[in-house]
Length: 315
Image 1 (cartoon, rainbow, N blue to C red):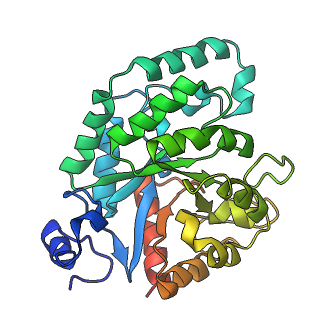
Image 2 (cartoon, rainbow, N blue to C red):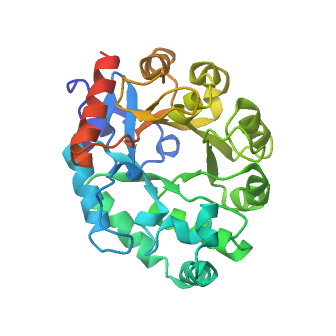
């Protein structure tokens, strides 16, 4: 066996699954796993906060290089790292909708999505697969500014990227609109939470997640344990109850009572308890690092520190 925390090679991974029917595997040949004591790790590409601007051709090669440097083999890639415009152009941030020229920018983004060939996304997928890496989730923040044609096209884009499904910072009302698209494309959408406890349309509490999970079996959860803690919720209890519907967690540290982001281990988020629960119960929940607390060091260095904290927590 390779040492704890290493990347599994194709040859070793092939031996592990040799006795498993291929129909049950559903993995790219190029995929590796980043395992620490049986817990699978990946990264949210938001963590790379020093990337070139959206649309710069250096973005994807930089993400690939960063992942290889850190030693994580799988990611949740942000739409702003795939499309040539920042996420604020697509209406998720309500403040952006008040900016001069927003309607024009939103329509330009829509037309780009509707007309860009799938070869654009397939080429991005190849860059990851050629490096032995994988895009598991496409992070698209669906909202009411999407047309049905745009929603449909975005599902096709996710398939071309090789993603299994979506992670989405969305709202309950938009989740209702997504039901027929998720079911037609047979692709899951994992709802990502924040800590807005004022707006009942937001994903922030166990009840809000449970509302969406009842809409469709194709709806899952991306549980941001930092945001959940900041909203004074209990991530350990939620994972124990809903582990079968949780695709991945975002591992980050925040303080309670809508407190700030902190370096791992310095906030109130029960990172150690969550990781050990997933390990001990053998839940098939991916743990994606999300670096957001800010420092003068480059993102890669900080993500390595985050991963080392997790490795020690699972030792």
